[in-house]
Structure formats: C-alpha cells, structure tokens
Image 1 (cartoon, rainbow, N blue to C red):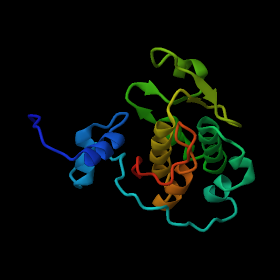
Image 2: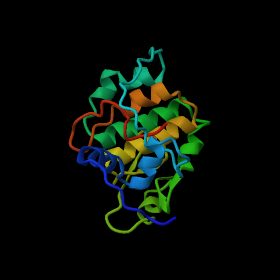
Image 3: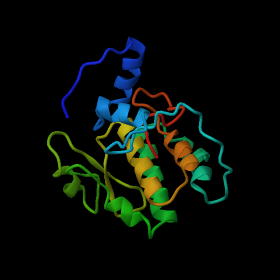
Image 4: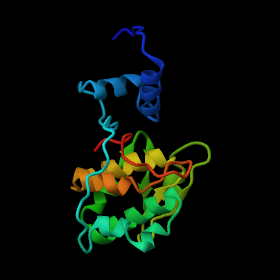
Length: 185
C-alpha cells in the first residue's frame, strides 16, 4: 500500500509515537486504535486502570503482591520471578513459554549459549530461578511486559490478571507502569 501524508496535532502524534516502539510501527498503532485488522495485537490503546482481581492463595496475583516478590526492584528480577512462578505452578503449560519466539531471537532455552548465540552484539541470558531454563535478559522493560502479556495470555490467564502482573514491571526509568497501555492482551 502506498504511504500517504496526513496532518496530525502534535499531542496526538506524540501519543502514537510513544506507542510505536519496538516491533510496532505507527501504522500498527493507528490500526489498533481504529480497530482495524492489525498484523499483531500487542498495543492496547486503553488508558484504564487495572480492574481489581481477587487474590487467591497460590494465585499469580497473590504472588506479585507478596513481600518476597516486591523486594525485587529491577524489571529483570521481577520478569524472572514471574517466569519461575509459571514454571512451578503451571509446569505443563510452561512448554509454551519455552517455545516462545519473536523474530529470529531465541528468548528462552535450556542453555545460556543457545540464547546468546541467537543475536548479534551484547546478548545476555540469565537462568530463571528454580528452573533449568534460561531467559534473554537484554530486553528493555517495555518488551518484558509485552512478552509476559503474550505468554500469560497463551497459558490462559484472564486479561485483568495479566494487567496486574505486567503492571508490576517498572518502566526502564524505574517508574511503575500504571496500566498496560503499551501491551495488548
């Protein structure tokens, strides 16, 4: 399709530009906002606050609200902790996590080497605690939230649960995301 030029107010463009990061183009964002058939559904234009989900013992919500989890300040530590929880509490579904692919990069593998050799530059992997699985660790926190949302959705979590869980991963500047406006579930 031939690109066209349109005039957009600066504040509108700034919001579209903010959402058009990583693998998503400005067109992907606009398609999603217009509810057109976008090629990928990873940008949620909603600005609503997460709906409270009642926590149950052994639930992922209870886990991310626990003092143990909250002691993790860095996005990578929270990311790995959530993956570890999935491995422990949803072992049969964790295979979907191991098969996760995004482009040619390997995000999860049974060896550090498999991940680190899947990309160019400074690619690093960390072991997911209490598992035999390694995770790509050189990701910005927005990408970690997108990957977690995709994976949690794939293993059957409800949208409200996903919003709460990914909302605990801070932005790369250390602030917590108040919603998953940059993630689609």
